[in-house]
Image (cartoon, rainbow, N blue to C red; front, side):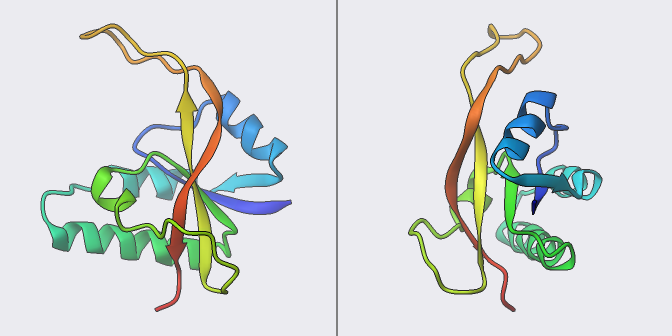
Length: 123
C-alpha cells in the first residue's frame, strides 16, 4: 500500500480514510497534517512556510500523495499538469456532496477524492 499524508485543519472522516485505502493509500501524519492545516495564512511568507513544512512532512514520511483540504493560497501553488518527472506527488481534495445550511454545523458526505494538483517535493 502507498503512503498518503493528511493536510487539513479537520480530521478525516471514516469515509475519507476508507476511500483513500480503496485507492491504495494508507493515511499517515494526520496529527502533523492537522497542525499544518491550522497554521495562519495572512501573508505570502506564512504561505511559503506552510508549503515548505508540508513538503518536509511529505519527504519525511516518504509520502506518495497528499489528501486534504487546501486553502486557496496553497492550492494555487500546486502544479496543475500531470507529470512523470520525479519529485512531484499528487494532491487530492474531497468531493463533498452535501452542504450545511448557513449558520449551522458543517456536514460532509464524502463522495470521492479528486486530484487537484501536484506538490514539488525537491528542495
